[in-house]
Image (cartoon, rainbow, N blue to C red; front, side, top):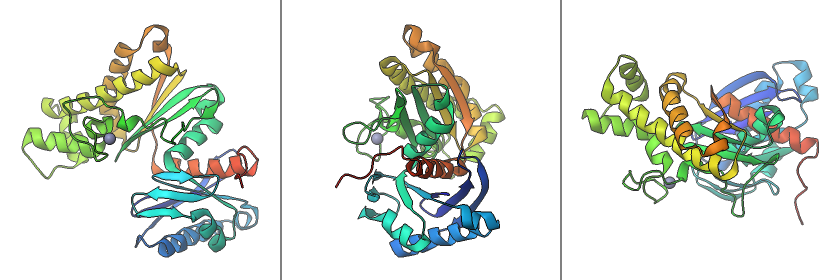
Length: 307
Ligand SMILES: [Zn+2]
């Protein structure tokens, strides 16, 4: 099983050993308290186990993915921004409550692991994964392994600087890709341009589809920024595939032509042959990523925790 923990919701899936999703369920989270969240995770796991008798006896492992910095080998959430957790032995707590061997991982890394094991990684040794939604993030696979770098932040495409005159990012820097191309960034920019403070993404999508040039321009700017940032990685590391995903189909469709064009224009020489795959990735995909990490741990891909 895999569970993704967001700020206010849990998304859980049951998968087989090839990470095919058999069932999915969501539960609202009522509090940020560790004990509440752990209990809710156990409740969701129990709910999924009860869907079919064989799930009860044949569920062997649980993967849980959270935002922020995670020490996967030790099962510790080093820093989780939504709930404010620091140095929390999350895997042990959840394992004690569910009775399942549990692995915790960063959510984007888990999504990248799933892609590496069961997605484009099956045919490509190197690829870049980009996700656009409430934030912009990325995962990087080089020569068959998910790369986290010396400090665990490799692949963080969202904080690649794309515009020195751009908006300030929550991370403290200026003009990060996330500050230009995330959903909140798109909404903020459009609200400024239109002088209407209370807009939401679905309103913008409707207006863009209706031909509003100003709103279309905001999507174009965001899409081009994603494409340029991805081109930087393509030129540097030469991945065979670039996967761009989002949880909002219509928004993604508005970004796609511009990100493809910018990526193409900014790719150097043969690096531009990288295949670009654009597709929807709802939160169930992220939960599947957590399950994939549990599968990989179960069949012994990851090294055991040192000491
Ligand atoms: Zn930033």
